[in-house]
Image (tube, rainbow, N blue to C red; front, top):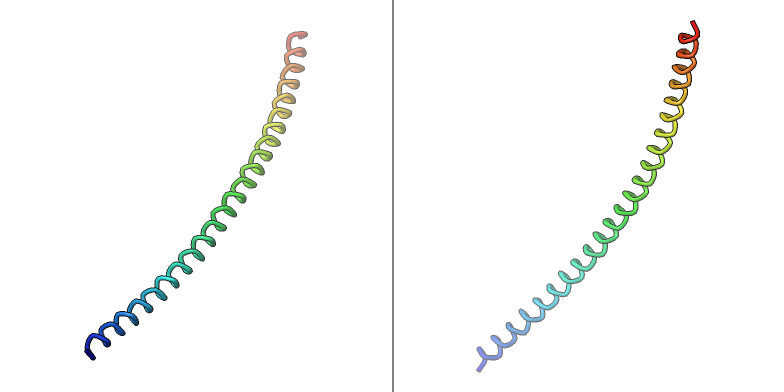
Amino acid sequence: MATKKSKKAKATIIETTTNKVLGFATMANEFVLAKTEKAVMTSFAMTEKCIGFSGKLMKKGLQVSASQQDMVFDVLGSIKKKVVKK
């Protein structure tokens, strides 16, 4: 009879310990999942901001390029008029 009680007591201790470990593992998993989700969402937000900034820079660069091309064509046009007159 004594062995039956000790086996049952050991089983109870093992079950309790297993449940505690499982609870800690679940808590750790939820914590890591929450932090990972926050990091990913922050990363997406920063990427979105960078893409918007890059788009603005490209637009400004294209505007500058267009104005420079207009100046070049204006100069070439004026040179053409002078050459044609002569």
